[in-house]
Length: 159
Image (tube, rainbow, N blue to C red):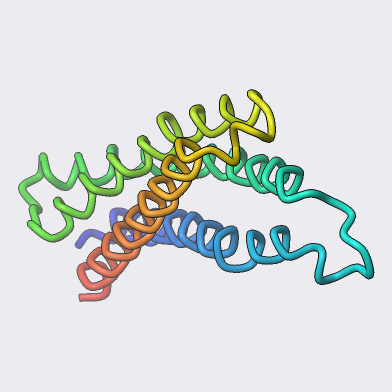
């Protein structure tokens, strides 16, 4: 691997690592704290619906990072593919990351936002519960795909 391209590769890996870290932090730290805020105070300050609104705002902002990462993945992995530096595992992880990232940010998030705007009763419906569960699974798939892309590119860059 040429020196300049190796530098670009490490920058790419760092950006994907930041996205992965932000995703894991939002899901593993921020969500449990927000949805258990009643445990922090003598009496709950927020309803579950209000906690959901706060969590949604966190994920709305995370979608910007996801979108930037998707653009970088398309450019970097597309270039590598065009240069015949193909790897079936990385290619599959790339396609999964692109699809799941776009689904999360541009299918699930808008629907969840619209359901929240419809009011608290809508967020207690089966439709909302299904949509929310599917978005959680999709986001987990996205993080695993990112991890695979990072590991595969690290293996190639460190040779």
